[in-house]
Image: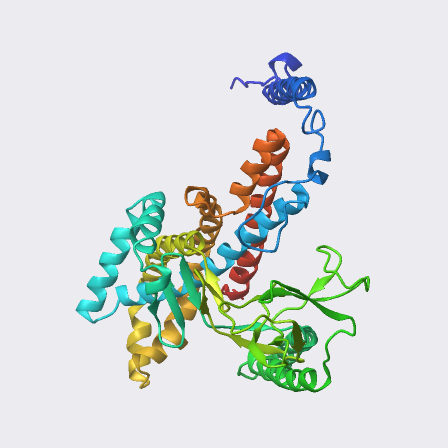
Length: 477
C-alpha cells in the first residue's frame, strides 16, 4: 500500500498568508499615518499664515480675549468677558434644554407608549396619530412650526393669556410663577447635598441587609426618608440661623431701579465681576418723606425695577429672606418681571425636542410592553392586581430590559438635535460657537471644542444608561 507524505517545511515568508496579512496591515497603518500627518501639517501651515486673529496655528489664546457680544439668556454674561466664558455659557444653555428635554420627553413617551397598548380604542388611536405624525415629520419643520406658527401667534404682552395663578402666555415668551432659592438658601442647599449623600448610604445599607438575610423589600425607602428628613430640618435651621452679608449695599438709579449686592471691596459702588449680587431678597423703597412706595423681590441677578411709582424713591431697606421664595410674574411697562420667564426661542426648541423625541420613545415603550409575555398579564389578573398595579409591578420592570438600549440612543439624539437651536436664535453651544468663529476665525479650534463637548455629553449619558441597563439585567445562575 502506497503511502503519501506532506511537506513539513514552512513556505517562504513572501508566500505565507499570515505574514502577508501582517505586512498589509502595517502598510495600511503607515499610509494612514502619513496621510494624517500630511493633512495636519498642511492645516497648521495654512493656519499659521492666515489665522493671525486667533493667535496663529492651533493657538488657544483667543479664549482669553474679550468677546464683545452679549448672550440673551442663560448664566449672566457681559460683553467684556472672554470667549472661553461665552463658550461655557453656550454649554450651560445646551445642558439646560437637554436635561429638561430628556425628562419631559421620557414622561411624554411613557404616557403615549402605554396609551398605544391601551384597551381604550379612542386613547390608543389618538396616541397612534400623535406618534405617526411627529415621528414622520422633520424636526426642523416642527421647530419652525412651534416658533412661528404657535408661539409667535400668542397674544401680545398687553393682552397676555392668564393661566390662573400659574402665569401668562404671550408672544414674548411664557412667564410662570416659580419657586427660587434665595440668598440664604445656599445653606439649605448644603443640607440637601448632605441628605442626598446620606440617603444613598442608607439605601445601600438597607440593600445589603436585605440581601444578607434573604428578605424582600424596598431599599430606596430608607434613603428617601433620610433625604426628606434632612431637607425639612435643614430648611428650618437655615431659616432661623441665616443672615444677610455684613457688607450688603445697594445702588439706586433713577429712583425706581437698581442692584442689591454684597460690597466685597467696601467702596460703595457695584462692580460687576467683583461684587456679588443678592438674589430674591425682599426689599422696600421709600420716598423722601419716608413713605413706602414699592415692595417686592430682587431678581436672580440682584437687580430690581418698578414702574409708575407714586414718588421717586431715595432709600431702600431689605429683609433676610427665607431659603425659598415664590416669585410671581408682574407686568411692568412692556414686559413681565419676576417669576420664571421662558423665551420664545427656548420654549419653541424645548417643545419641538420633547414632542419629536417623545414620539420615538413612545414606540420604544410600546415595543417593550408588547415584548412581555401575555401570561404575565393573565397571572397578575389571577392575583387580583388591577391594570395600574400590573404595569407598575409586573410589566414595566420586565419591559425596561428591552426599552433601555434604544432609549439611550434617543437621549443622545435629543442632545445632539438641540444644535438646531440656531434656526430660532437660541444661544446654545453650536450657536455661540459660530459667533466665536465669525469674530476670531478660529474655525478648527472651536469645532474641536464643540465636537469634544458633544462627545463628552454622549459618553456620560451612555455610561450612566449602560450602568443602569446592567443593573436591571437578568442575572443567570
